[in-house]
Length: 385
Image (cartoon, rainbow, N blue to C red; front, top):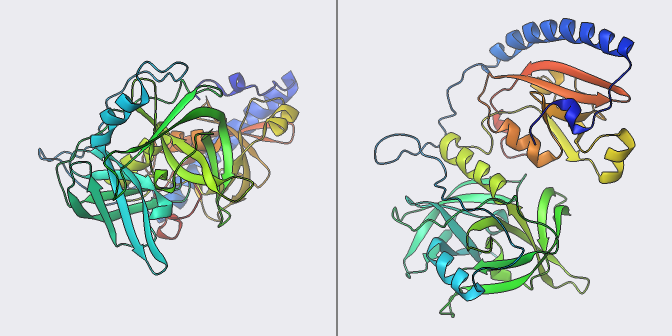
C-alpha cells in the first residue's frame, strides 16, 4: 500500500503540465498550509492530545494497544487439521448473548487483550445488554466500547479482567481458491466450538448490508456457516487469526450462510483506536468514498484508488480542495488502492499531523497539503473518514 504516488500507476503528464503542476502545487501547498493551520486551530484540530472519552491503562500505567502474536499467513495447504486449530483458538473465543425486544442474538467474540477487550460483529451489538461466556464457562457482562460502521465490527470490554488472547497472523497470504477455516464459539448446548471448512472464494469484496452500508475489502468464503459464526475467526494453516467474520450473507434461497471476513489488520486498527482514543479513528479527513472498481481504475490508467462521493464542509478534505468525483491515489506519497488502505494510512496519524494528498481530477494529477483533525462528535459513528 506504500510507495511513490506514480508507482501506483498514475500516468505522467507532459513536461509542460508537470512544470505547471509543480508551480501550482507549491503555491497552493503554501496557501493551503497557512489556511489549514488557521482553520484547524480554530476548531482545536492541532491539539495532539488523544480524545479522553475512554482510555484504559495496563497494570504498569501505560496505554496498551492490541496484544499481537504474529505468524505468517498461508492458507494454501493446511498444516494442522481443523479440529486441532479449533482447540488451539477456543480459549480466546467467547459466546456473545444480547437480549433484544424481538429475541436473543448470539454470536462470537475474540479476545484481543488479556485485560478483557474483545472484537465482534457490530450486528450483534443492538443494545448494551451484552454478556460474554468464555470457553472455561465464565459468564460476565460486557460493556460496548464502540461500534464502527466502516468495518461493521464492535469492541467490547468484559467485566472479567483475565482472559486468554488468541494468536494473531497477517492477511497477506489470503488468495482466492485457498482453504478457509472458520471457528466460532460453542453455543449454549454444545461442548465444542463450531468449525466450518471451505475455501476463499474472493478477496477485496464489497458487500452491502441491509441498512445500505457498504463494506469494503472483505474476504468471502464458501464455508457453510451457522448463525453463531458472526463475529467468529478465520484462521491460517497454523491456527492464527487472520480475519473476523463481520457479517454472514444470504444465498439465492435467502439462507444466511456465506461468510464475509474483515482482514485482521483493519480489525486491529479499529480495536487499537477504540481502546486508546475512544472512537474508531484518531483523526478525520472529512470524505465519504468508495473503492474504485477494476474497470474504473483501468479507464484512468491506475491500479486503484478511492472515488470521493462527498466532502464535509469545513473539513480538512475541503481545505485540500477535494471535490466529489476526485480519486485519491496516494497519502503522503504512498499509494492508496482501496477505501480500507486509506483508512489504515489515516489511522496511523495523530490530530494535527500534516497530510499530503495526491488525487486525480479528470486527466490531471494534483497534490495538496492539509492537516488531519480530531473527528467531530457528530461524525464519530458515521461511515466517513
